[in-house]
Image (cartoon, rainbow, N blue to C red; front, side, top):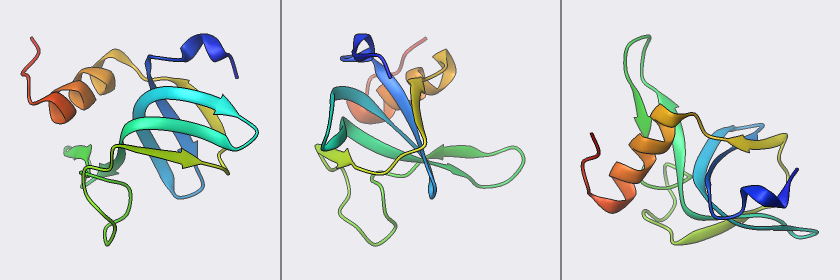
Length: 93
């Protein structure tokens, strides 16, 4: 994975699902994301972000390090915009 993604909104694919956040660092310890949010699909027409990673975990965690992951990639424009709106409260057009 390219470190050139540092500072951008990325999607980390894990065995439990997709986590979106701003990439802080990549190293031997894993991938560190700022303001991570778990992507959830409610049904065929509704999807969004949990305010954290685990249903029973803390909400609005400032950062996490993910040790085991499948891949890291740039988030698509729609997902990045939705993540920015949820984490900043600013409505983007």
